[in-house]
Amino acid sequence: MSNKKRSLIERLNSGPVICAEGFLFEIEKRGYMASGEFVPMVSLEHPEALENLHRDFQHAGSDIVQAFTYNGHREKMKIIGKEELLEPLNRAALKIAKKVATTPLGAEPNLMAGNISNSNIWNDKDPKTHFEVEKMFSEMVGWATDEGADMLIGETFYYAEEAYTALKVMKKSGLPSVITIAPMGENIMRDGVSIVDTCKELEQLGGDVVGMNCFRGPNTMMPYIKEIRKVLKCHVAALPINFRTTEEHPTFFNLPDNNGCTCSTPHKTPFPTALDPMQCNRYEIGKFAKEAFDLGINYLGVCCGANPMLIREVAEAVGLKVPASKYREDMSTHMLFGTHKRIPKHQRDYKNKA
Ligand SMILES: [Zn+2]
Image (cartoon, rainbow, N blue to C red; front, side, top):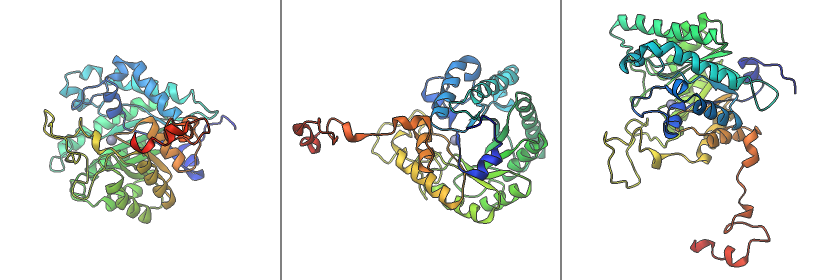
């Protein structure tokens, strides 16, 4: 294997490319972020924790090391009164991602991705916000380019026009651009454009990879992914969340607990801190990845709810062998369910009562 670094498009043209997302939920679970506030101060306050998560995802097969700057934009930093840390936070996150990407486990370096995302101030009825958002995106793309990003990811947009704006800003950098949308429960973008039409426009605007990420689990993302794959010629991305969303509740925001939990969260909804019982298991995530790959979708991953084990599952579902494959399940030596000849008969016989 040569250690020449292929571009994103070269990789996608020759097979599946895995991208781990979902840093927000996983870093929160690891104890380094306040849920709800969701600001990635971790790059400044606990850089080692962020590097470790990147390393874990890399070990599990992520080809892309996405800088954790989700919500690390000027608006959110203003809300928490730390605007002066905006640039240091972005540069720190980008430097950590670059460090991990350039020290791969195999011979070929990973790709480091700069990241911009939903601003939450975009208002289709207030053009002043459009100008603000464009400025926010431009400064972040500038820092990403500066820190040596190989590609850019614009993600989780629920206004079509905001996604178009993000893509236009990313395209100016000349870097390969991935753009993924996250329609909310009304199954349409908030400015009234259909999901498929938004993706068509993003392709027209030059998106190298167009698709969907976040908010939706496999069940409520797949129907749209199929449509998108049919009408687009460019590479398509599919990164669902790891939760069992339903037709009645297409996103995780209003997903009710259906496992009989009687304690309510302080904020009433299971989102975002009590979704655990509604998680997909690894086989459901693997099945989604395989189905998407068989449709011709090569850019695959998991968003909120992702963990290294699920990223390995995605990679293996599409035929890849990754460093973490060494630890793939092996029940043959299990104390009750094992088939190894050293597992005593009284143990095997007891398995149905265990
Ligand atoms: Zn997500």
